[in-house]
Length: 167
Ligand SMILES: [Fe+2]
Ligand SMILES: [Fe+2]
Image (tube, rainbow, N blue to C red; front, side, top):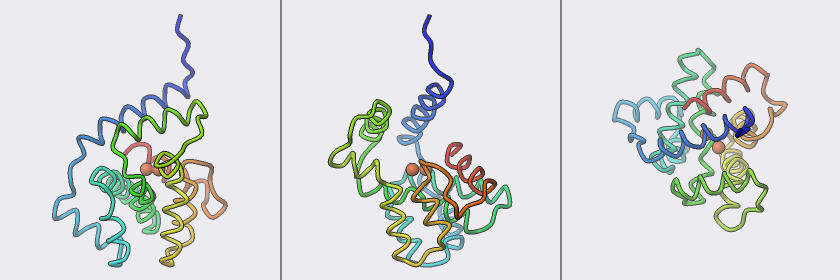
């Protein structure tokens, strides 16, 4: 009998969803782009958001909207939209991303672009901190694949984490 832990099942399911949604991601419509500009509130942040590949723009925007629907504060919406901006520096498509994630599960030490992808949280957080963004957005971006940073409450962390996983 094949025994797969519940956690491994969840991780595999998440990886598979990301893999297929990456290829199928719809670019933001003109209306969504206007909405994203308003929610981000500055050209600097809009430019960072738009520097992402289409799939990451879609993931960030949908995560942000998920938080809007739950009446979360605007800084969490911005955090949802911007938390993966560091990924673009790895210049990876879905195969590279899926391979990097799978290798991290078996503790292979990443190198080259894989190490950039693995460090996308801290790389993105540095970019945001350099632009004077709210410290809670910076902290969430740095730690979103890790543990709740002290800057966030449990409720804020749980909502952001769910927005990231569901979108
Ligand atoms: Fe991420
Ligand atoms: Fe994400």
